[in-house]
Image (cartoon, rainbow, N blue to C red; front, side):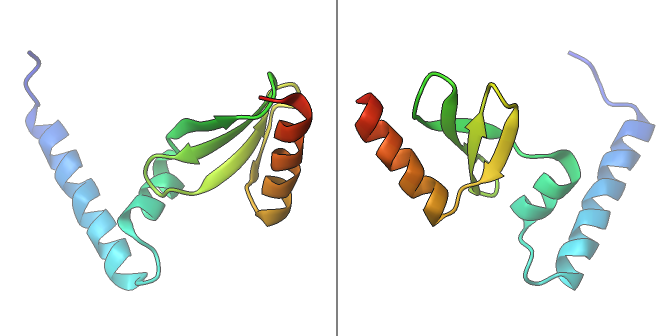
Length: 94
């Protein structure tokens, strides 16, 4: 088991204080949203549409996205994209 050095503990404490300061001054942003902005989203599979198209969700901020493997793109999942995905599910029968 690795023990934290004094510098690592200090850095962790400073990061917590900085995040608390940001949250206090940004009331409409929640802690998960700020964490995602700093460290990036932590995705989980929500629904597989086709072999190359999926709906994913961030475990922290709960935002939903559409992901296309062949094009390597991720788009925010809105009503229009969700409707298209529903139609594709009906076509492909998955």
